[in-house]
Image (tube, rainbow, N blue to C red; front, side):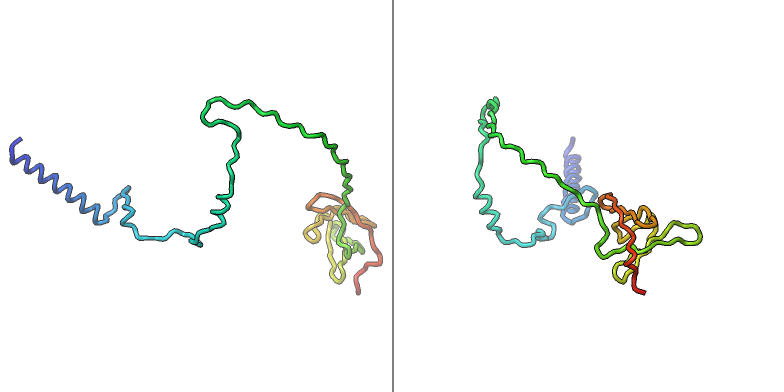
Length: 178
């Protein structure tokens, strides 16, 4: 290699280095290029209250290390400890829980039933003070009860939350005011 070739090669390398520094410093972004942290604009951390939380510091100071009894510098495990057998405490007697069947609200009365001429199922009439509800078999009442069967003298329903069933009888004196 002669002197002219060496100088030309050196000039090409210097131009390449200068080009790299120019593009790197000018902020021209290429795919995969990362911006140095010092060139990014400052953005504070999203901390609600930057004050020192002394209660957490005190709580961590009050904690005590409790060893499990194992030596950290040996490879073998300690022999298993035998748990103390507590004195036998008699089991409490089983409690008998009598579940009450669901019932309609106290002021709700079943005061009658009827049929529609075109052959649909029976409709039950229920009153809650001044409010009157007309429901058929399979309908829901107050979003809590499903009407299962409407009989001549009783109304069978199911509480949808628990699946428990009950019935109420016809109350002839609970007709709504005319």
